[in-house]
Length: 118
Image 1: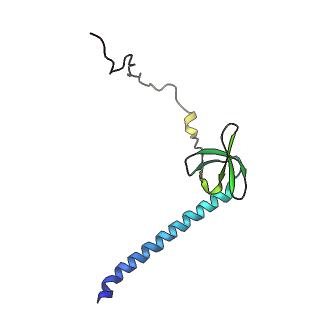
Image 2: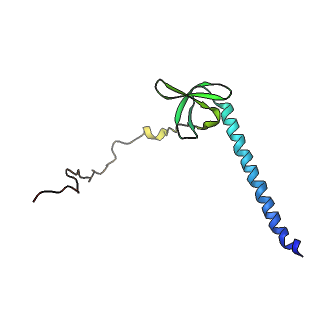
Image 3: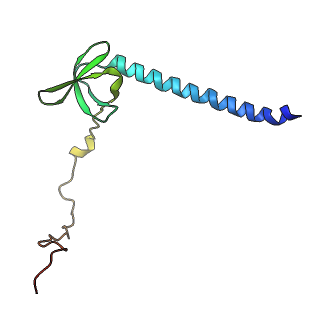
């Protein structure tokens, strides 16, 4: 009788573990595919948030240019994803006849915490 009570719980737990491991395998395979497809000139993000352009690749390392003339060496495992530039072609067809409202912002000339003698 006690086994019948725990059987649905064990089935749910087993299904959860199966789907969780499957998702993890897919993510790991996607990361491996990304690392194998990297080429010189690709813009990438690292796991620490750094963005750079690949200037050299070895089996375990990548050289990233993070500023003009500044090249750093990173482990390939530190590359998180490839930066994809999204260019919207509709941005070039902007109408100049569209009426845009004037800004109502005012410039503060004095700090609000400024004390005046008086």
